[in-house]
Image 1: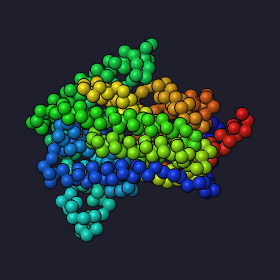
Image 2: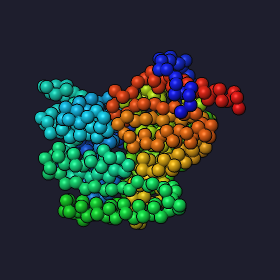
Image 3: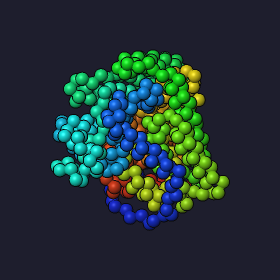
Image 4: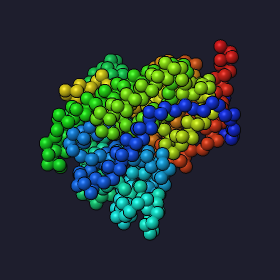
Amino acid sequence: MSLITENAQPKLVIPQKGAPANRLVSTRSGGKMVKDYWDRLFSARERGATVVWYNGAALNPIFQAAGIEWCHGEAFGARLAAMHLEGPAQRMGEEYGYNQELCSYARTTLGCAVLTQKEAAKYVNAGDGADVPDIPSQEVLASKLPPPDLFVNAYAGCSTGQQWDEISYRLFNKELPFFKVSYPLLWGNKADAGYLRGEEWMEASRYVAAQIHKLIEFLEFHTGRPFDWDALRQSMHYIKKAAQLRLDALALCKATPTPAVFWDWVASIAPINFLPGNQDLVDYFAGVKAEIEQRVIDGVAALPGERYRLAFDGIMNWNKVGWLANQFADHDAAVICGRYTHSSFWNEPHLIDEDDPILGMAQHYLLCPFNHSTKTLGELLLRDCETYGIDGVVFHATRTCRSASNGQMVMAKMAQARGIQTMVLEGDVADASFYKDEILMSRLEAMLETIDVRRRNF
């Protein structure tokens, strides 16, 4: 990190208010889609549906084709944190014995698993919980997840994630069938290795594809139903179309000033990550793209006072997304791209063969943004910095997600060698106690001042 950024002493900075951010309107429909999805999942037991809890990769098209209701553990943990309702689940996880240093996604979801087995689960349909004796209202949402019939673990690059299934197995009295999909890390140390190329890439792709076929056999056995391959092809048809629309919309943000910002793409993660592959998903991203296209035509900026163009590396601090967006906007800093939004979630749709989608799906699972060598991650970062005209990079050093932070120091040096300024923000994905407002403010101010100095000198 640059000395002016790293040596700055934490202090509370009260910025002069910049022009207000101009967030996309089209993303609001995504919020309703997500709420409807969770509300339907909460009623799975009443409808007699089979429920799978899973973590890691976007296996939801597989579950959709198998006729199973699905709950993505990290997604629910992020939702609770974004709603500031993560406290009860995290405290329950800690009371059960899970250390605060454990991945806060896992700790939150495991806490939910404990809560689903409490008496509170009997009352979750009584309303918001305010009139239910001895049940805190904040605890009710965390208690609403229907207990799983199956668990599927599909994690890349994370040691905690690879043990999540076994811990869940214990929590549910060792009666929970689970299946583990193993993703090899893409080391990239062979002569022909690189992003989407080389022998290592193809071997890993075939290895994961074979496991997905085994997963389908597992689901057939436990549901007693044949897998619906036509449903999978249809789902992946919609996902491929939606992913391409999303990719096209991301590319429009090269414009100066940018018509949309990173925070708009954060709001669009849930739809592309775990919602059903159907026409609604396509319509959503068509609407997002159309709004951005119109902004480019009309010269409408996401941040009217844009002075700085930044990239964000790492997972979001879900407890603070709105606050962070406002702080960057107040400093006229448009955060335009990020590893989590731009280098994941069906980000290479050309890989998907709609007639035979398994290999392309396996390849996307390998493209988890934490499953590459540091060299590849740095090259992808530099590619985005060049594409979007980035002045500085904000590295979110996620306290309980080491896989998200691995390599960031090397990546920062690669960026600095190109004249791009950097800063580190310590925080966490779902545990607000690891984050301090004042540290962000002082380091952001220091980085922006360094960018100004560089502009004057060059």
